[in-house]
Image (cartoon, rainbow, N blue to C red):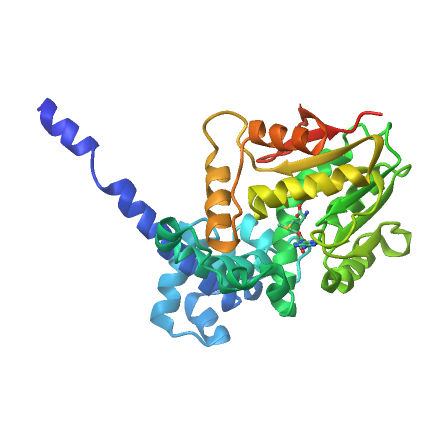
Length: 343
Ligand SMILES: C[S@@+](CC[C@H](N)C(=O)[O-])C[C@H]1O[C@@H](n2cnc3c(N)ncnc32)[C@H](O)[C@@H]1O
């Protein structure tokens, strides 16, 4: 009897569940592509009504909708479907917190690279053509729709960091530049909460129009964040009390990280600092988030990977900084490490 219990407790369920998870993702993406949640905003409908409105075949539509209710994205009552609270907030196109851009970026840009994970693990080569040929961002920014999806994704990940960092004590500093600061989401939040700060973003020139649009959306005419277009591998970094590298160093190999920190040391004013945040591993065992981010870097970037806090301390010291791991509440999956430039 005991032997049977043991056999039943070890079964392939967890493995099959992972495979089913992959198909559930396909259901979510298909539903978003066909506008299911947007169509259901503020109304309820039977599967036949919804299939008619969206031009779907009734049999498949019914399976899809029932499946989405099992996933907690729809609710089914008296034969009619409505959005669940989470779907209504994040999956209805046009809503402020719509995350369709993030899903589109994952599907178009990251998932094809993830398909080559087994190859990347054997060769160490990125599975993203653009990263083999050069800076993958140059190719990404040639496609306006992909760029918007990417920037939505970045802001989804950097918003908790921006909120936490805007509560950080900035009183000893008067200026900062967010290096690789994308469309300025982090910089805007920090300046809004700390109006004594002069904030700027340094990023590739093609992002400037998206930066301007985002600043208009967030701050209107009051936005004081400046944009410096340039390439951080070939241009001098702008001077400031603080230079921030957020979700940037893990995109690049070790030599490039040290190169960027060395350029930062030249640009940071004496008494200032460099702030680095990434999902790095604090201890010896990386979190699942850090593992996924690390593998995403392996397949998508050239030489990128997650790294440990201890490694970063070493690179900061090599560049001339005095490293310190800062405790900041609310950073979620990220760690903040500060490199001080002593006077
Ligand atoms: C992963 S994103 C991080 C964005 C933002 N800091 C955040 O935390 O969400 C990396 C950023 O680095 C920028 N970047 C990549 N290569 C660059 C280069 N050579 N010079 C300047 N910026 C670059 C990209 O355009 C992108 O905005």
